[in-house]
Structures are given as structure tokens and as C-alpha cells.
Amino acid sequence: MIPFVDLKPMEIELKFELNQAFMRVLDSSIYIRGNEDERFEQSFSKFVGTKYCVGCGNGLDALMISLRALGIGVGDEVIVPSNTYIATALAVSYVGAKPVFVEPDILTYNIDETKIENSITNKTKCIIPVHLYGRACNMESILKIAKKNNLYIIEDSAQAHGATYNGKRVGSFGDLSGFSFYPGKNLGALGDAGAIVSNNKDLIDICKALCDYGSDYKYHHIYKGYNSRLDEIQASFLSVKIGFMSKMTSERRRIARIYIENINNNRIILPYNELLKSKYNESIDDFVNNHVFHIFAIRCKNRDKLEKYLNSNGIMTNKHYPIPMHLQKCYADLGYKDGDLPIAEEISNTELSIPMFYGMSDEQINFIIDKINKYE
Ligand SMILES: *Cc1c(COP(=O)(O)O)cnc(C)c1O
Image 1: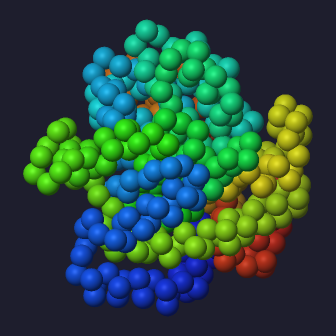
Image 2: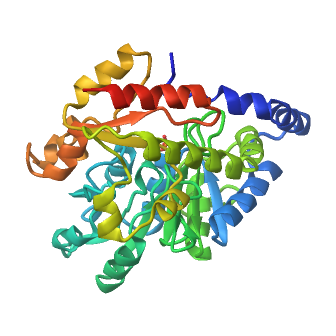
């Protein structure tokens, strides 16, 4: 059986250092707001290429607190892609604002920037581009639209640690950016964790206070804040794992390139293909070297049949995501119906994610390619 994700190979390589990190925190007897937190925040902002970083409890909080810091709330609208993880939309709902769902581009799976302006109203305050599956959004166009319409940008970078666009890493483009360190993310803690990054000191100071009960100084509460802090143990683990990121990312890119160059079944649409190549004038080198392949997504008309076939051959798969945001039960109140966002629906109906993790063996990679090529 080939699992969809296996964290073991990486954990085995890092076991000694993770143990050391844990012992260091245990010996310090400081578990919240100590040196580990600060140390990781510094190395993570350096990694992303922003001036500031504040750790928090998880990726959802990172987005929600970013929205709060920008003063977004009741009566406001926020543009989000319809094909994302629920957290992007929920963050908007949690601050009392309304998510407005925009279609993705069928080639990149990221928000289609040419459809953003049609969804802007006088209530729109912010765009949340999601760098889905580990590929950066077309930030140049999105930044232009935001500037022209006087909107904020919060990047949802939860799937894209280290992904690049025009030579800069994601998370460094928006007013604020939220990251998740959920264990299965490319940079994962051994539990829940997240972070907000920015180049704006004032905004980061607000986020920092919001994460810690809204206090700028002990027992002085200037905002109605949250309890959402990055704890010392997770920060110490993250400091170990951030040192592993270049190895982790090159391995994902190596596997992705092998998949792209060897899967040749015309029933399967690969994430890099002739259409994407010609529309974006993008070479395979550019595609692979900017992407971080949190998820390797293929598409197939008869997706459920392909899924059954692969699973019965011992290859575990996943769908990201089977129901687009506008058709989720929890958003029935927004009044969308089937067919309203056909491209998001098409992706939901045809996408299948195949195994992609550090430590996959060549035997496993070749077995997967062989089975997919024999699918009819
Ligand atoms: C994982 C994820 C989140 C939320 O992160 P958590 O740490 O699970 O709260 C937000 N957005 C996207 C796109 C994600 O994949």
C-alpha cells in the first residue's frame, strides 16, 4: 500500500534534533511566549522575505486575525476563490464579513484575476488570494487590481511555504499573509500552529496583540483579542523543520517532475500541460521551480472511477476539494446554486490528488506512474 502522505521518513531523519528541541524547552520550563517563539518568528520572516512575523495557534486564526487587524468586519465583503479549503472562507465569516466567491482559472487552479473586478462592490474591502496546492497566484495582476480599487490583500499561503513568483516568496506580496503549520503542510509542526507575516510594523503589532488576548502590555487589553499563541514546544520543532525546507522542497520538485515527464495517459490532465505552457508562456523548469507541490493534483473526466482503480491497486488518493465553497451546506445562506460557478464545480468533480511526500521511494513513484498509464 502506498499512503497518500507519510511523515515518517522525515521524522526519522529529524528525530535526534526534535528530541533535543523538546528537551531544551522542558529544561527551560517556559511553554508560552519565550525565546523559542521569537527565534522561530525571526527565522520564518527571513525565510519568507518579510520584515516581521508573529506566531499564532493555526492557519485559520492567522487569516482571521489578519482580517481583524485590517478592521474588516460586519457589512464588509471579502473576495476569496471558490475552490479552496474551508478555512479561507470561514476566517471571513468569523469576523462578521461576507465571503464573495470568485471562479478559479482552469489551468492554474488559482483565482482567476480577470474575474475579480466583476465581483467588487462598494462593500469590498479585501482580496484573499490562495496559493493553492503550492503554486503562487498571479500576484502582479492581483496587486494592480487591489491598488486600483483601494483593497487590501491577505495572502492565504497555508499550502505554499517557499513557493515563488517573480523571484519572491509567497507571503511577501500582501498587506498580511497567513501560514498554517498543520502537520501535513510542507512546513509542519507536530500539532497545530500558524503564523502571520508582513512588512508593516503597525499591522503586525496589532496582530501580535490580537493573538494574546488583545493586550499590548500585560493586563492592558486594547482590543477584544483571542487566545491564539504559538507555543514554545511547537516553535522549537518548527525551528528544526525549517532547516529541512530546502531538502523537503527539492524532493517534492523532483517527484513532481518525474510524474509530469512520465505520466502519459491522455485521459489524465497533468498540472503542467501544453495549454498552461502556451497561455502563461511557462517552461517546465519555471513551473517546477516556483511550485512547492503541497499537493500533486491531476484531473480526469471519470474521476471517481480513476480513484477506485488506484485505491484498489493500493495507491491512496485524496480530493482537494470535493465540494466548492459556494455549494457547502454551511454557506447555503449565501444563496448560491449548482452551476453558479461552473469552473470551480468542474475542478471539484474532476480533481484527484496522488501521493506526494518526502521520502517516497523510486519504486513507489514508478508503480504509481505505471498504474496511471495503464488506466483506461
Ligand atoms: C490548511 C489550510 C488553512 C488552515 O490552516 P489550519 O492550520 O488547519 O487552521 C487555511 N487555508 C488553506 C488553503 C489551507 O490549506
